[in-house]
Image (cartoon, rainbow, N blue to C red; front, side, top):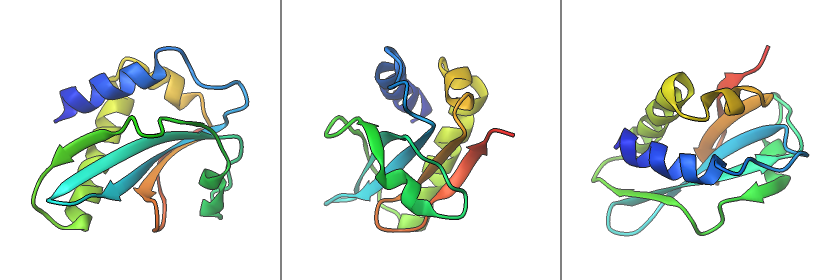
Length: 120
């Protein structure tokens, strides 16, 4: 699963993100028939105390989503996304680019965000 996620993310980051971006977020969606998707967005704001920062998009992968099918709970899907992002931040092609942003978050689009990385 990681290889497919990394290839998808590499393609999104290949040409960089807008200069106004200060943080990125991975929006998770539950789809039909045990499907799950992840969307990459970049925001021109970041506030560790207020998840609304992720609503101020300056970039979105829009309908170009990372998709997988697996029969499990939303909590397990959330954990898989955490592991994918953590692995990418450790060894991904554009890990250093992501670490230059103030934060990398993830979460279900209608739920709370979690921060996978915050630049000190």
